[in-house]
Length: 143
Image (cartoon, rainbow, N blue to C red; front, side, top):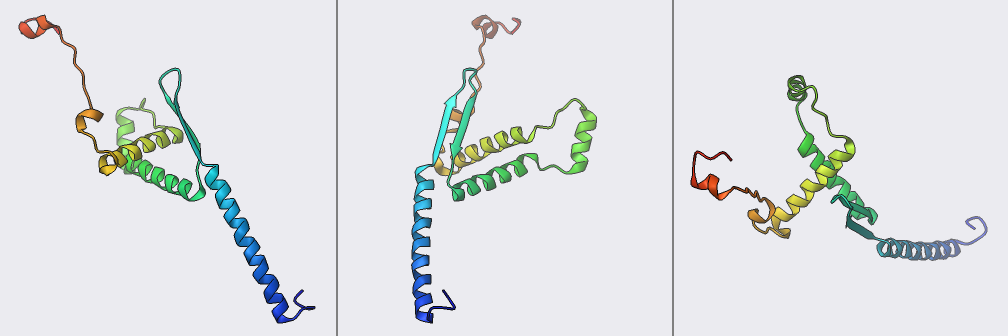
C-alpha cells in the first residue's frame, strides 16, 4: 500500500486500522470485565476455598499485595533463620502455597484494620475460657 498509494491514502488506511484496533481493544476489555468472578465457599471440613478470574490490572495488584505480604511475614535474616532451625530442626518452613495463603490473610486483616471495616478488636480476636463454678469458688480446686 505504501508504494502504490499516495501519502493521504496510506494515512487514511492507518487511521481506519487504528480505529478498528481501538474498537477491538475496547471489546476485549469489556469481555474481560464481564468475565471477572470470585467464588468463595466453605469446604466440608470448614476450610474456605477461593477461586477466581480477575482483570489483568486487578490481578497484578493482587499479586503485588501478596508478594508484599509474603515479604513481611517471611522476611528473616539468614543468621536468625539458621539459629531457629538449629534450635528446632523439626520446624517446617511453609511451602510457597502456604506462604501465599498466609499473605492473603495478612492482606485481608490489614484492609479491615485500616478502615475498610475496622470493627472492634474483640470481634476479631476472641478467647473463650470455660471454667467450672467450683474451680472459681475454691482456689484449691484443680482447673
